[in-house]
Length: 195
Ligand code: GLN
Image (cartoon, rainbow, N blue to C red; front, side, top):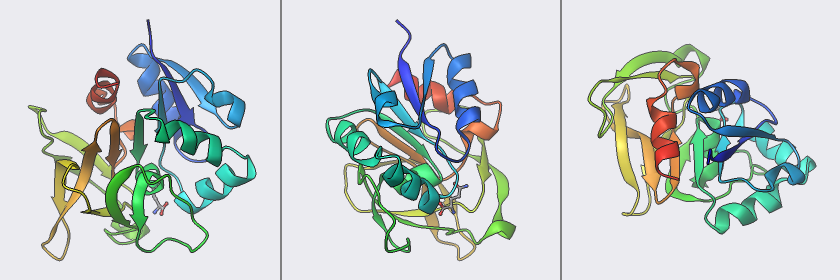
């Protein structure tokens, strides 16, 4: 049976994730309210603005029920702002910004600079033969906090330091970049294959 994947649709690039997942045969439910969480096999938290998504999760009373499902092991993919929302630590978030703390990384928002530092670059991703088009938009960087976090791709910062941009811990996947803004479905496919 096709998996039922929730795409958090409070703000940000939810439509593009929906299109990619549907192309791969998944059934997609847009999640805006607690009742939209019923029956999901996985959840995608899109890019956008993590502070705004955090605020809307609270005001729609969706934060707590989603946190509970994630704590019970609901598989998750978080891209960009979604990565920030899934990280155990947000180093420079707003004090009232909440996170689901599902992957043992610390994120720094806008690690590649602000809007001007949005860019596209080919990424070498573990287990993918061909490079993946990485679209970075005010993207976060990550520090690994727990040894069980796998780094599947990383990228050099202006400082010359490498930062992880695609990580996995158990069934939680996060990317600093936006696979949903490309025609390349390999990352969504990888997510669906590992549910
Ligand atoms: N910089 C944004 C944030 O802090 C994330 C940007 C994005 O999702 N494209 O939430």
